[in-house]
Amino acid sequence: MVNPVWVGTLMFGEVPIGVRLYSARERRGPVLHQFERGTADRIRYVRVNERTGEEVPAEKIVRGARTALEDEYVVLEPEELEALLPHGSRTMRIEGFVSAGSVGPLWYASTYYMAPRDPADARPYRLLHSALDRSRRAGTATVVLRDRESPVLIEPTRGVLAASTLWWPDEVRAPDDVMPPVPYTALGREELALASELVASLSADWDPARYEDSYGRRLTELVRAKAEEETIVHRPGEPERPHRAGDAADGALQEALRRSLPHGRAPGPRQPSRGQGRRTKRELLRRASELEVPGRSKMNREELEEAVARAGGR
Image (cartoon, rainbow, N blue to C red; front, side, top):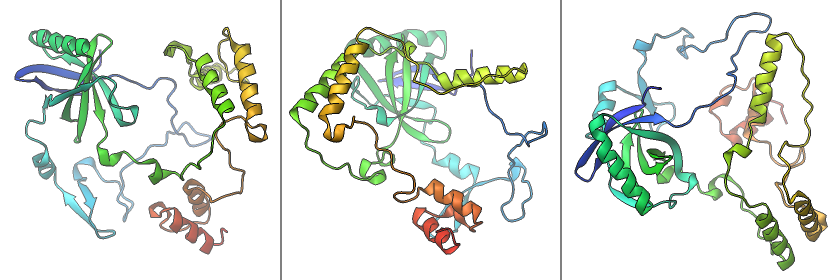
């Protein structure tokens, strides 16, 4: 058993249900740490004063936020932050119900299993679970979790209730905010029919057991081999996937679709050539680091580009 991340009360109308939230996911596989090369010394991060470079104990650290003026901050005391929490921050009150599946995956942040807090809470808990399951509905509420208030969706899954925190509307970016517009292209009837036929031929029920974390498996094998002073060689090849009936037909469909497209190109992500187009912010940060550009971590992409150019990095 694991420790709950939140303990409180779920209000189903006027019926209080004591509940606990447990994280529904965990990362698996080896955890990679940092060491100084040639030694067994771990590299650890410490809290240091940016001006003096000296380590600061946890009890002396307070939180702050930037104001509208650049490089100006205000300090927020713990009691001030506590006073901002909504009344009844240990309570989730269901405010309404929406159709199951009406909230798209873009809105989901984290998901938790919800369990009754005490044996007396099991009956109203089961009542809510059954009502949502039969009506194919999900409850909407808000929750304060880890010093943050979030919308939450309560829905039945795997025989229990799950609570999924959601993003706020102003936190979900529009495509135009983060990527260039996709050029309009007129689609031919034949290629659209072939693409639809290919989708239909590859359609299947969702089965997570069909997927494997091949990188995680190879990393585990590498750690084991090095611990036992063995040597293994991984040669990248074709993606591993089980053979299934219809693969030959799928290949014929893909070849027909490839031939139907202009210049015989199959649909897929466009890979920009090296050296073409604008450099990414990550590339500019790497170059700025090589050139020891001061203040680079606080610059946006355009400022980095100018600073790198001035430092001789064009």
